[in-house]
Amino acid sequence: MFRMIKTIQSDETAEALAISGSHVALAKGVLAQAKEDLGRFREAPDRVGREMYRDAYSWVASNDFAWPFSFLNVCEALGLSPEAQRTELLAEVPPGWYSRSRRMAHTLSTSLRGSLARVFSARRGALANSRRSRQPALAH
Image (cartoon, rainbow, N blue to C red; front, side):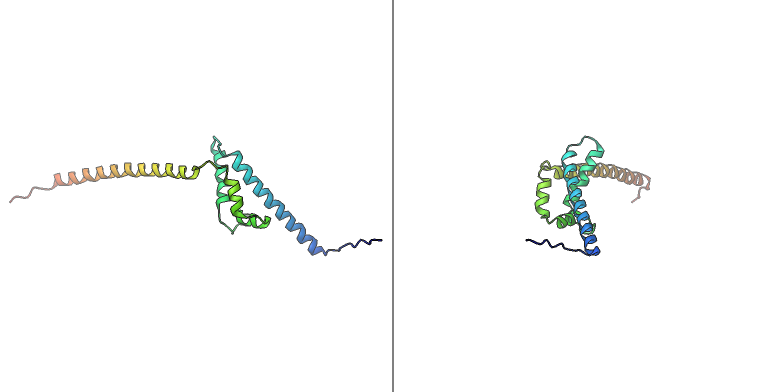
């Protein structure tokens, strides 16, 4: 006859297991939400959807360990490789999305700088001309 042995856990051990289990469940939920947001809002036409996508993308791309549920800490809690998860999660990202955004921002800032430089150089030139016209001519 087989006897079944029941293991008895202390209240502290049971509580620690329950807490760690809830942290793991929360970590799984956070990772699942990021995956859903990256897919759902990838080509969102509205500002809120684009912001949701950027938040999920930034969270996955971050190397932060400070926040308990940062991407790296979530991967560690779940025993997953952050590099492999990033590759999987960001595989659906349109190629060049980030670099295209940076190029657009660079083009806009360059254009703005050029415009401001022309405005200020024109003012500087006008100011210099007005100062010269006010100076008395030197007699030789």
